[in-house]
Image 1 (spheres, rainbow, N blue to C red):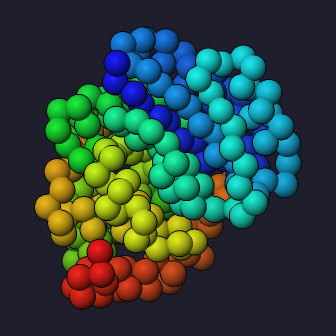
Image 2: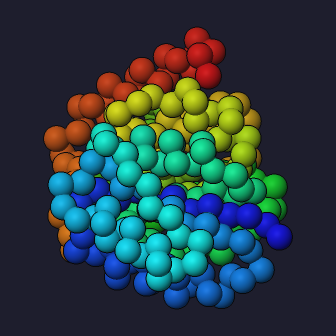
Length: 239
């Protein structure tokens, strides 16, 4: 049986965690031909997220909660997936902004032979609900900034809904930059530079009503710096 692990980074998610896991498992019940482990990677929360996650272990099969002292979505995903044993490795956001019905498509993409499968809000067939200003910023970032400075091979590098195979975990994850909230773009840019096979799938995506833990506007400068740093590393053969 194909083994799948799903990592869900969670930081101060006590208000939505129970609902999100219920929504996810509603979709997973239709994927019984796969053996799926779900790992809630709680990282540095100031609320009851971790205790809630531990309580969910008793209710849902193959669910485990892990705790990391340091807050950070990227670190939580990387550390969790590097420790896991599976054929398909998936990570998705705790608010289920991407409809989890697309998990099946992520798995199938990896089994088709792709190294990375990426949920996309930009390609034909995607259905997106997002505030106008954030839509514009996303379009500028994905259509102009990234293609010009750090090509990734996809139209939506930042969607937090992706699947990778063991090759990506072993060869790319160990060298990803720590603590910069730039994992998705960096991972894709490196994979493209190495000739990995990448598939982009259209998704249903809805802006969460919860307050984001990342201020997109204040991180613009940091993103630009990261882009040039990763670009330099690729050119120098660091990866």
